[in-house]
Image (cartoon, rainbow, N blue to C red; front, top):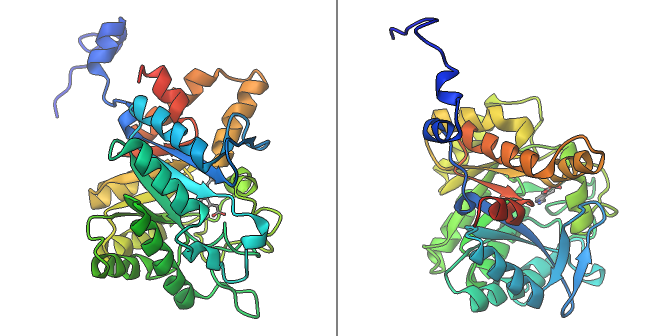
Amino acid sequence: MAQASYPALRLRRTRASGWSRALHRETQLAPAQFIWPLFVTEGRGVEEPIAALPGVSRWSVDAIAARAREAMALGIACVALFPNTPAPLRSARGEEALNPDNLMCRAIRAIRDACGTGIGVLTDVALDPYTSHGQDGLVDAAGDVVNDATVEVLVGQALVQAAAGADIIAPSDMMDGRIGAIRGALEAEGHAHVQIMAYAAKYASAFYGPFRDAVGSRGLLKGDKRGYQMDPANAEEALREVALDLAEGADSVMVKPGLPYLDIVAKVKTRFEVPVFAYQVSGEYAMIEAAVAAGAGERDALVLETLTAFRRAGCSGVLTYHAAHAARLLGG
Ligand code: PBG
């Protein structure tokens, strides 16, 4: 392509004023692209601040409905729910995940009642908030997470969430074959309209620590999740994971964590041309808040710049604990 050169070409010309920068902006950021993760806990009228995530709390089911109403008023697309299951209900096989009246299902129904179809409800499918060992699946005698038996439980978990009114099932467990199994079960059980957003490229990351505090699994987890979550060194493998999940019926795919993996987002978007989401995870949120507390950066600017970067890399939307704050900044 023929292009003028300096001085005929001066790229600073279009940057000289606010209106011109806005006119030439290639990427737009709006609350409709945000998914807000919320933590649910037992009780009534409860708000429990999470020390590792300053500014983020666990909410009881009644209070979650109020948060969802707030999100809807801000124009946020969707909330993502994670339960802090009471310790006595956690077990080796995570049976509480299948209870149609568990925290997650009650929260889904409360949001449905409060908001109708005005906001999406995305639910996490994985067993770590329900297991006494903190792994995302069933473990054998050697402590390994077994794939196919876990998938059977995940299918049951997805079905109770769909029956409670979930709009998007989001499996975060990284078992092989779970997308196809869940898609088939949703079709068979009359939930053909329920979407699946696959955590397709989910890495075994050091950025999940505060989340594990939030759902109460940090102290329980022995070992690590590297036998199922991806090696941070791999990109080609992420494309294979995405291809599989799409072939099995995922409506959209997610890359997680977010900012350190924008190269993966860009590769997935270019290769597959499907809706791609990223999760700006708990450790990323905590890093921004720590930078703000240390006087190393300004919160509003850090939040908007990082979220814009996700969009520039190719994301349709972003899961972020800063969703409500960012929506307010954007005038939602
Ligand atoms: C586990 C799950 C994790 C997150 C979402 N679902 C943690 C993990 O894999 O141990 C992390 C989210 C975050 O850090 O914000 N199923």
